Image 1 (tube, rainbow, N blue to C red):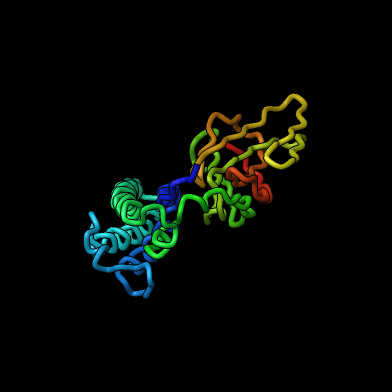
Image 2: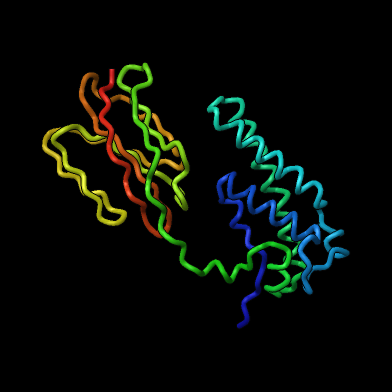
Length: 229
């Protein structure tokens, strides 16, 4: 049985930076800037979302993502709203391209989208962790751990806060803990920064993190010792 090919919607799962790069390419391809035997600007003129609107929301996503890096709540909330709008508009464009492509993968690629058959390729494991920091934040028993930059290809993050005398080793995606009578705090999150609560005051913790995705985990950051207040 022949499998129907459509424009993948996996771009909705990407980071804002990846969305902006992807969206910029879509705007170029649908705008007819790149000539192609399969590219038809007269057909693209019937898009449910005009190319100019796609370009506008892509530019606004770039600006909103830059503003959100300050960490301000209002800017982060604004980014979420623009991401939702971006997802909706580019999804509508992808569905339209699927309908006009009639399972022709070349037509889908000519429009800048990815045919679904290519999703069978295995994704590489997440990259190594760099620019990691850990410190107190002025609250009793609290540590903030974060990576200043996104870990390449990571879909989630694991943070550890380990007291002295406890050994932590990594075997692929499995964390092996050697524990005496001390507690170890492990937090998994889809964000690259996390606050670890309810740690004993005055007890040194060695804090680290690593990124992971469906294909594996990246290297862990060198641990940094933090003593919660």
